[in-house]
Image 1 (cartoon, each protein chain N blue to C red):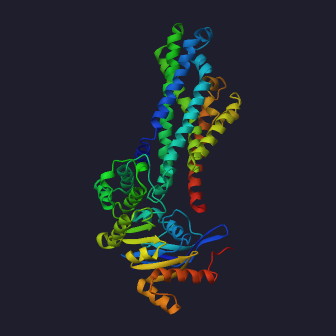
Image 2 (tube, each protein chain N blue to C red):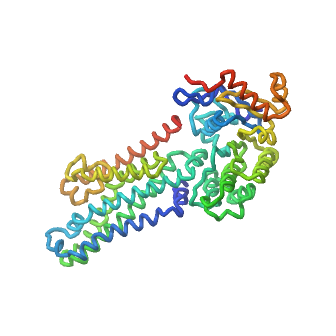
Image 3 (cartoon, chains in turn red, brown):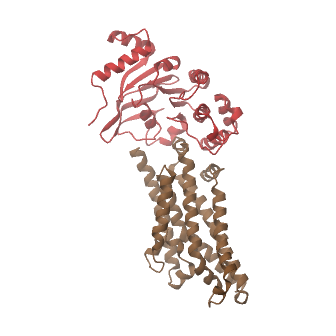
Length: 253
Length: 245
């Protein structure tokens, strides 16, 4: 059963198409890796899911709910982390999470729970503006994970983390569906990273979905198309290059 | 709940000290005026409160406007500086409720400032005009009426400034717009029926001047309508923002 589905989802800015007729299918309880080079349209797609920007054409469903009619209801079910950590710098990490907790109507214990989940408990009383980049990233993740929402939308969540942090967050994301019975949509521009945590992947280039399926399906599809399959990073780059060569460049009207 | 959240967000931002400092500074103005040149005013005929308001309110109202501009900028700078506003956008909270919460806080702070200032003017009138002290009932009526009128007259400016600050991610832009508007609209004549009703100009109107022209209720009615208009403008802006972002 798909928990997120899009139908010809399109977003244009003036004459520039950021996302073009996207048809995505995200299975409930899976980790879906959303892959694409910088500027492929990953963040724009995620922003549309969260109602931060309005689709120009097409539609999407999240847990059977549609935008814009069910916007508030969708946001109650979705924990998100988009582009960069978002917080109030003058408030401590704990106070930042407490604001989110109050809005979501969660118990007080959920703040501590989220802080522990991302390893920020000992820094909870420090103003967020004094956090390091990695700590800000963790605070952003805690804000997404608080209350253990059934759907998580994470946009490049390991940006700015050190190797140990990347490993820790990657392991956490991989374990989320099993631990909390949730579905995760995680974006990255690195196949090597997505490969380690995703059950299914979608590859986006210039706003168009080039591939959707499991890693094994990607390998066999790449093999059939004559792309290298020894290294998935090379497969990904070959797919993108081929698409760029075919003139799959950004659609301008 | 929105009000509680907005109060919490202002922690450690300097918002409350800015308003407290501003109101004390404005309240010190009539006091300094009376300390340094009392004869200029005590020799004048008429109600002491009106004499002092005529002499001091222009400067006090300007301070109120400048502090309100800074307040609006502080409020939205905390939203935009570290992307807090974006987090709010992805939480199940109505866009208008955040603005409403901020408006209530700004209105309460303005009321506090106005009350401190009017009390200071009244205190000066009682101290320096001992032979012209009105009875307690009249004094209280005048005091409350003045606080309410000066608060109502300045409220559209405060709300418009919040709308401007909410539309500008860069605090310096909203601060610049506010200061330019404050100094540009300052030149509008206060005896002109229409021009004195504009935001950034209306706070300079005093109750005595409005009463003299029989425009007290017209003034308060128009100011209330302006507040509602700017609130509606913000809601429309919030909706449009999603379409163009």
